[in-house]
Length: 545
Image (tube, rainbow, N blue to C red; front, top):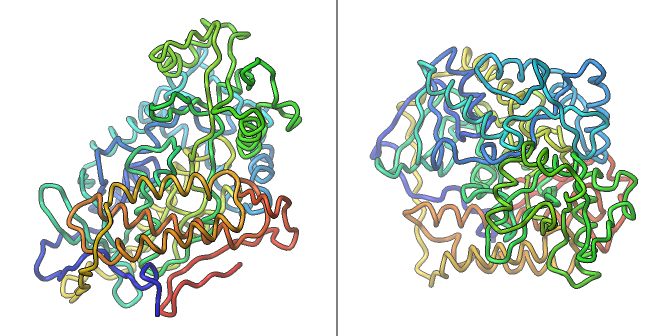
């Protein structure tokens, strides 16, 4: 008998002949940097619909602080950025994908500037910051520590002014529609219009990450892994799902939401210290505070355990505080809100889930392998990040591969059939009458067990326990028919969390962001080998490629 997660194809019951149908050439799911850039590209060539589950500016992109890693300085070299990315990726990067984002990066930055993006400059020269893992200053930033907001606002402004692009906010994508092996669009639920079917010649999945499956996260509430779960139910291969990146430094105030303290703060010279003021990172890595994120996160966790502490601290008191406030205005205001005097007090910090490295497997053209479907951004596994994302490569990847996905969707649409107006697609699933557990409690419990057992450090017994717990919850949640977003999100979170836990259990080594205390070293036999999870008629298929 198939597991409930592996047997479930759709989350809702529908008949396309009995609910509203909308038709377009191009459909983009998601309004982060990748989705917006893809939609702007496709709308140059045909009618495009962009749907987003919340407001168009509610995304990880808008919250990004540090900047965009790009080779702009005459003294910097493409090969240096490529090599930095490959080194941090710990043997799992696709060099061709890395080369693509690095070499196309400058053009995408110039494009944003042409569209009105205001990056920080000194006179006419772009200011370039330094972050962990980079061999040269190459981080383009805006408003000090609000790069994501400037990028998002620029793309949103362009998108809203694009003639053939229509935007549907508060429109939840529930499932991918597949007819005869081809993606033909998505089933959706709109807060005002109810259930709808969107048919498209080409669909681009850019639905973002899944940080909300963890109790400690920098991600907004919308990041519930919907795209990953939709793709899994549609039978697409998901790759590297064990690779979840934890940001080392988020503001730790008990009872408050975790707020990001940008990598760039350490790039400007901040020190990580314990409660006595001892600087500890030089003991863990030659690059100290500028070591790769996985190294810094584990070092903080080790010191917290060693000292029975709830957090470590980021000290900036030795820096020019006025200059710091100008460079990081948002972070400075945040600290002031909690009465932290940066001139005399260190910032309490601890790691939190930040970025999903794994996702829907795509090739170097952002194609998923399923006709009619492309994927980009955090929902996709492009091969750029390998086992660990280099700081500030995420906005860069979204810009580059968003454009790539859009360009290739346009090319693919030229030879593809129109929307399947006559397709008879029906989902006749029945709801279980078994007792349903409290959805809000399930979400809270899931996030806690994922943080405890599938977080920065992992080991087999706890991973087995997690899979068992999630399977149990699934018996009472996955077989239900919900009629609201919180229910579908919870089902998606359970699906994605289960895949992360299974993948973490299957990769019996430590590599990049994936650290197994029972297998603390990399296994040379797994160099370049990716773990693939795929739903099939016979159940969950797990393989190494």
